[in-house]
Length: 363
Image 1 (cartoon, rainbow, N blue to C red):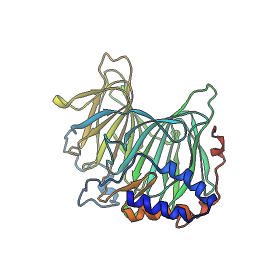
Image 2: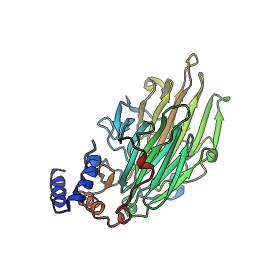
Image 3: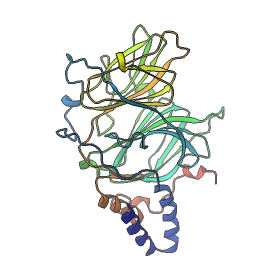
Image 4: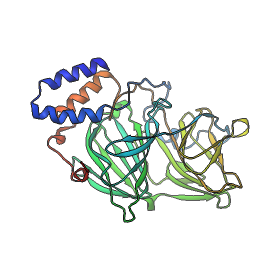
């Protein structure tokens, strides 16, 4: 990384003074806590498997409940410009959990947010829980997601965009989840794209006599399939809420990495000696072995337990990450930095571009 930064600094020295000023702002943004990380390999897994492999759990006869690898509290921190996030993936507690790169539970108010910034090599999934957030990018795309909506963005070879909160009538904050998912190496240079999933499109199901409510955002749950396949990398996403006394056994594809992020209440995960009660704002990481998870909320609990259950196909590839650039080698990261500065190879439209929504920032 030191060599990379040195080469990058030398390059900047040859740019014009005005251009150096703009790059300095970019470098401040890119200096995040991320470092180069080699993820564990999962040999034999295809990059883009056929639906027969990832569309459903492999064996209906196998019923092995996954054990808990670890559970930890997501600590709140500053991020972007005035935003507050609880990051549970992309920290020393859980660096890269392939295919997952980062998970933020964010809170943003008007005057704060995520102004103009680039991405390359990953997908981002934004799930809004409260309020509304505007989006705008250098290709002229613009829109708004509201509570219950999701936006799936594929950065591919490069994109520059902004995500800024709306002013809520009651003055409340805008709250949501953002998950970064790695792209298979062969798709790192694909064209960027967006897909919005509205709350009204998401199938819902109630089980255990109405004590458990499930929003099937992506994947399958108790005979209900999600409406769309929204990410290139196969991912299941479920929003689960359990009333006191309720319980759920949820099947997951074998061999996939999985976690549950607790949004509210206290939920117990696992069975027998592995059973663990977990409070709000924790990430529960499951072992890869097994084809289901079990969760329940005690009969006498004072509130419902709600969690965000996610599973994804691990990718057999190296991860080298520098801020919003996620590639497979140091050389590719360096090239991404150069492409961004010189507005080339996917960043041509970034030259001179400034979002309208980013101007709402309080300076």
